[in-house]
Image (cartoon, rainbow, N blue to C red; front, side, top):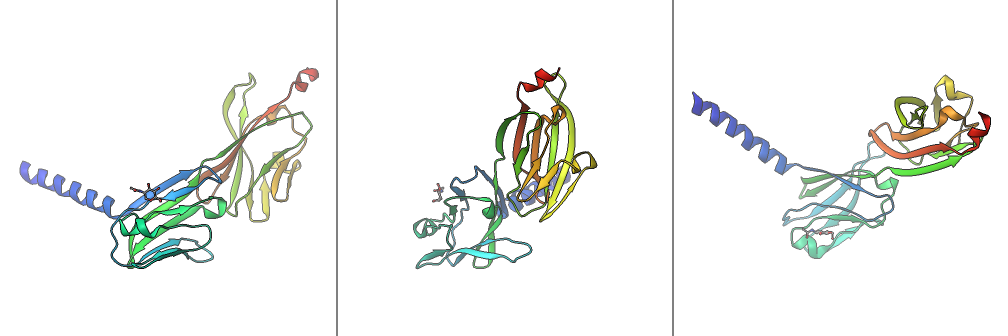
Length: 227
Ligand SMILES: *[C@@H]1O[C@H](CO)[C@@H](O)[C@H](O)[C@H]1NC(C)=O
């Protein structure tokens, strides 16, 4: 009985190992505007195809290689020498928001790798006077949510997170508390900033659950004049 159990466990481990080596799901996290390499290794004696997965508009082939040469769309690079050596990596020389998302690499129509390209959140520090406006860029087409982690009374960050607005294309929906003070064109502007607005604002891609940017807002000394 014991041997049987061990065999079952062993067999399970073998399946798990072979599945994870077959499907190379990886996340590549880079800084915005820096080069990014989506790595993929595997000998391919036939043709290689890198595809960017795009849900509404349709997938786009961004690079191809065969035994004689490689070609790629503008903004993507593949190396024929490396392909011949079994390195199928795709390079994005300057990665911007339009390059975010999932890519698959196929060898003769069979998936070899699936890699997602993501960016580290951009961290911004803002110091403004009470009454001024806080401007936050919302530079991606996905649904975005803006949440404030409010500073505590003692200046330390409290655990309270307050939702402000969500932006879906050109539509913006804000919580009643903020509705009257928010303007939206391409960026979200919170006007007439006051004491309770200080804290860290997170701009989140709600479709992919990814923080795009944080805005740490501190009010300048003028608040002291009010006390
Ligand atoms: C594969 O190619 C990429 C892009 O040129 C390079 O950055 C990476 O180091 C190579 N990987 C190996 C294992 O040689």
